[in-house]
Length: 84
Image (cartoon, rainbow, N blue to C red; front, side):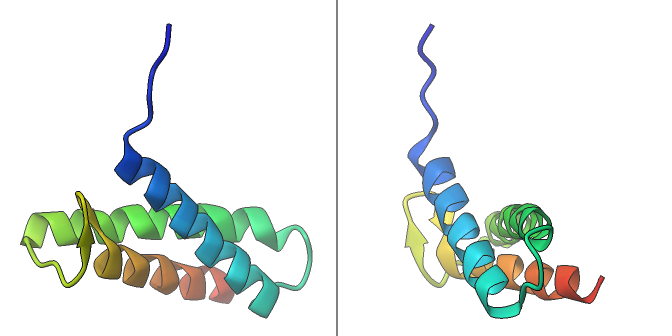
């Protein structure tokens, strides 16, 4: 059985992972920080995407993906995860 991943999900996971990796390189202390930043980046990206979808506010959109709102959500949760 072949199931395909929607392109917006694949792009969103890729961007959130890139943001988390960049944040880890910039602010991470140990390798144990990377999974925490990845999860925070994914959750924040999804939250930002959801907020952009619900409010119908979109600065830059690629397909169904609200790039700016989702990116802001990812970076916000990465900074929160760094504090915890």
